[in-house]
Structure formats: C-alpha cells, structure tokens
Length: 271
Picture 1 (cartoon, helix red, strand yellow):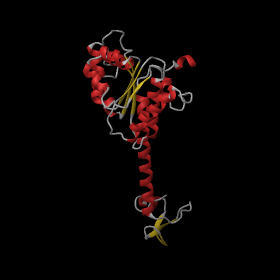
Picture 2 (spheres, rainbow, N blue to C red; picture 1 turned 60 degrees about the vertical axis):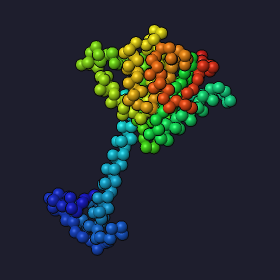
Picture 3 (tube, rainbow, N blue to C red; picture 1 turned 90 degrees about the vertical axis):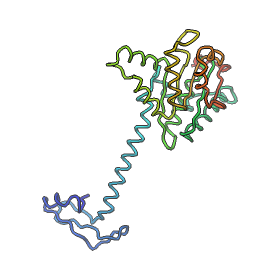
Picture 4 (cartoon, one colour; picture 1 turned 90 degrees about the horizontal axis):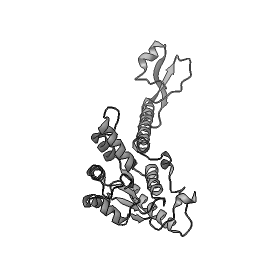
C-alpha cells in the first residue's frame, strides 16, 4: 500500500497524487487518503492504520526470529553421540501399564513440568542405574518437552560427556580449527536454560576421574544450576569416582529429582 507521508516523492515521479478523501477512518477518526492517477485501483486508506499494520508485521517477524533462535539452540550447540537422540520424546517412550517403566516415565514428566513452568527455579536432576534402561531417552524427552512448550521459551542443550571432553581436547590440540575454547564453552552453557549431561562415567574406565575431567565437569555445574545428569553408575560408584565437591553440585536441589533405573529391564533388548 502506498503511504501518503513516506512515499509521496515516489508517487509524484509516477504522476500519482495522494489527497485527503471525505471518508473517515472509524478507528483513528481522521480522513483517509485517496490515491489518484494510479493505473492500479487503490482504495482510500488510513495512514495510521497502515503504519500500525507495518509495525505489527515487524513485531511478528521479530517474534519468529526469537522463537527460531530458541528452538534451534538445541540442534546447533548440542553434542550428541547419536543424532537420533534428538527424536526421543515421552510419546515414543513405550511402557506397559502399571510397570516400573511407567513409574519412572511419570516421574520424568513431573520433573519436566517443574523445569518448563519456572525457568528461574534452580535444581539439578540425576537419572542413575544400569545401561539400556531409558535414562538418555527420558532426559532428552524432558528437553524436547521444555523446548517446545515452555512459556516464556527456554534454550535447551544436550551434551554427551565424552563428546564434550573430546571437543575440549580437540581445541587444546588445534585451536585454529576447533570451536570449543573455554570462553566459547562457558558462553554456550550459561546461555542455556536447561542442560542434559549424558552418560557421566563413560568418559574414563579409571576408578577415579582425572583432574581435567573433574574440573571440566565441575565448571558445567557452576555455570548452570539446571542440569539433568544421566549415568550408568550407582550412587556408591559415583561417589568413589568423583570428588565430593562435584557430587555435591550434581545433587544440588536434587531432592525429589533423583530417579533410580537399576531394576528396570534393558529396553535395547526389546527392539
């Protein structure tokens, strides 16, 4: 639509004139503008309505850009062992009615609800127990639920612990061709509203993790106080492998947010 104020010089070039009409805008109670001399029929319009319409379009575009930036954070910055992890949801976590699996699924749903209802609520969660029981699936399901449903929106992030440590080592060995510097890593973690650290303990077969591993993992919990940790280790094995101060961070705010998968069946055997 031609605007009487902003497009007047351009209109004169085309021999088009814009003059007040007798028609009154019912919203702003001003004369609408009539365009004469145009080859295309243009209905009289209210310049204020046109300006407001353009502002609304710009606001909608800004909202879309913001929404896309939040939704894409998970895909852009996460470090997965397997890309199909991104597809894990509560809907495709199949369980039998009244089973132990249904119980832990409902517990995970409750935790998801706490995270997405209040982005300022600080607490960590721990999913522990034997491998193949669905810990990664449910942790990722929480991220997807929060990523798609939280209002206001939240940035979500998934780290395989081995991939994160590999990325850090790659940067130390070749900083020119790798991203994950200390500053970059800290910014990515701090900007996230919810983080999953997956498969803690898989990074080393040693009975106790070395200082590099412990310090790297500890810094994650210092930078973000909303972390869901998954591990195949038992609570006793965790306490033996990691320093007391790290265990304290992992369990911070964890009351009611610890799920034991020890007695669940191996879901990988069911596929």
